[in-house]
Amino acid sequence: MKNVPNVLKIRDIIYETPSVKTFIFDWDMKINGIPKPGEFVMVWNFKNEKPMAVSFIDKFNNKIGITVKNVGEFTDDIHKLSIGDKLGIRGFYGNGFNTDLTDKKILAIGAGVGMGPIKAFALDSILKNLDLDILIAAVTKEELLFVDDLKNKGFNVSTCTNDGTCGFKGYATDKAIDLLKNNNYDEVIVCGPEGMMIEIFDLFEKHNINGQYSMERYMKCAIGICGQCCVDNTGWRICVEGPVFSSEDLKKINEFGKYKRDAKGTKKHY
Ligand SMILES: Cc1cc2nc3c(=O)[nH]c(=O)nc-3n(C[C@H](O)[C@H](O)[C@H](O)COP(=O)(O)OP(=O)(O)OC[C@H]3O[C@@H](n4cnc5c(N)ncnc54)[C@H](O)[C@@H]3O)c2cc1C
Ligand code: FES
Image 1 (cartoon, rainbow, N blue to C red):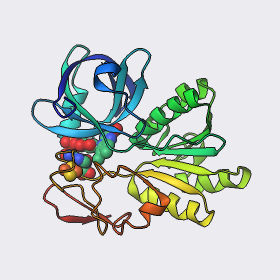
Image 2: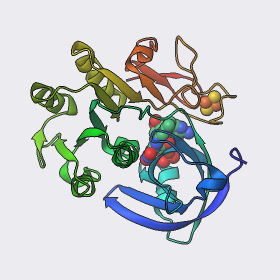
Image 3: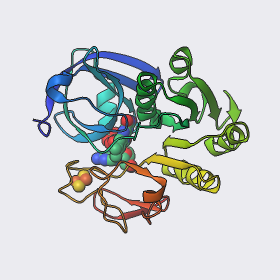
Image 4: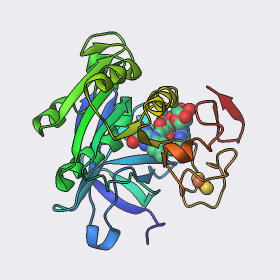
């Protein structure tokens, strides 16, 4: 019943930043399966349905979470909900990150709410004993996500903010240049605005470091039939072949960093 929304009660709400909340649900892993970091669900508020990455996966206690930034009508409605209110959760969907990275030194970079799937990757990396550093970027200090939580879990966490209110003053790319001077990374895991991802992609290509990049495109069905999320020129569906692409695959997606399509299919240039 993966493609039918599971109507679930919100079990907990975590106030992460002024604009971001995490919503926790019971999720019977035996019945519904175990999501992988980087996979996403379709969230139904009984009026509309939108994609959200899974940010929290606790397979021992049968819980999952989504981390939602309030940016418009749908996400504002979600933010108004309380513990005990219900949402429909359909999925999970997509390919997720490749976490088979034993013996590699990994840098994960999350900007803004892009930290959602990065958090799921980080939690999974503890179980897999991966060697992971994390760079968290945001516009300003109060919008940085999961910093204390990930530090308390033992990760080497760097931060950067556009306004310099916490950590390095500048963009994720500038801080990544700094980190590359002192570390020999084998792999970079990235999620955030596409303008940031293309800069990170160019930087890590120069260093010959493979990456996994989580892309967003407007989604409707999320099961690969409507064609809404197809990208030029490969025709890959972000909801099925993505949302995560390796550096090699990303090179084949001509529109990466240039444009995306809105709900009507009209190109919107960055
Ligand atoms: C694979 C994937 C994972 C995502 N994970 C998260 C997440 O973990 N947390 C989070 O806060 N947001 C996530 N998003 C983005 C989220 O779906 C949009 O922010 C949300 O749909 C905005 O809806 P709105 O009505 O509040 O705002 P609107 O004003 O309607 O939209 C604001 C922007 O959100 C994007 N958007 C709107 N509708 C859709 C849609 N149906 N599909 C894709 N993008 C849309 C568009 O870029 C739009 O310009 C993800 C998107 C994708 C594709
Ligand atoms: S959203 Fe329909 S094919 Fe991807």
